[in-house]
Image 1 (cartoon, rainbow, N blue to C red):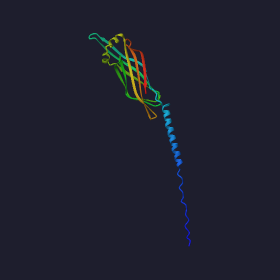
Image 2 (cartoon, helix red, strand yellow):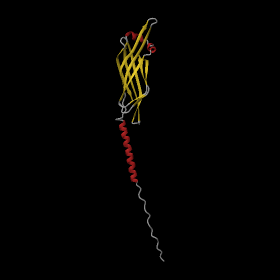
Image 3 (tube, helix red, strand yellow):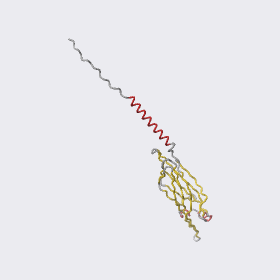
Image 4 (spheres, helix red, strand yellow):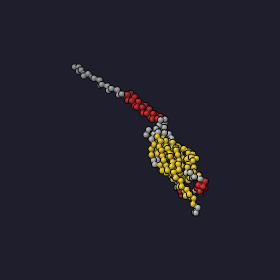
Amino acid sequence: MDVESAPKFAKPTAPPKPRHGCRNACIALVVILVLIVVLIVILAFTVFKAKHPVTTVNSTKVRSLKASVSIAPLGLNLNVTLDLDISVKNPNKVGFKYEDSTCLLNYRGEQVGEVPIPADEIGADQTKEMNLTLTVLANRFLSNSQAYSDFLSGVLPLNTYTKMSGKVTIMGLFKVHVVATTSCDLSVYVSNSTVGNQQCKYKTKL
């Protein structure tokens, strides 16, 4: 007696996994990320490239000058106050944040006065005006042996030195440290309380 065997059905094959589709999507994502990074780098070194802040001394004026010579005992009484008009231009496309700084008044290489410059920020493509008042510290000034001869000649050689340190943050990723200095040599004429022969040197370092 023949027994018929039940028909065997083939098992359905699983659909192929979309390996090529995932691979293409990953490649496309990597290419897009690379292009974004390249674009950021190009912008950082072209449009948003860090530029030197420009510090300029627009004017220096004598606010007050009081000087007299005492005979007995021999001595020099001096009180000099200078008004400085300084501007700092930020040519960058982002803000420039600078730290607490100082403007110094020097006489023949020795510091005889100073005024603080509080920390602040200068916006993109903006110029900040600063009006500073420098007063000569008489005790430091008179400690120099040449003070008497300079006073009697009628001309006091002074120097103003301003140093500003800060950072420029480019696209929130790159931080560039900037140091801008300004040194101005000038002459204060005792007879008419004026300033002349002003020569300034500017230097910026990234």
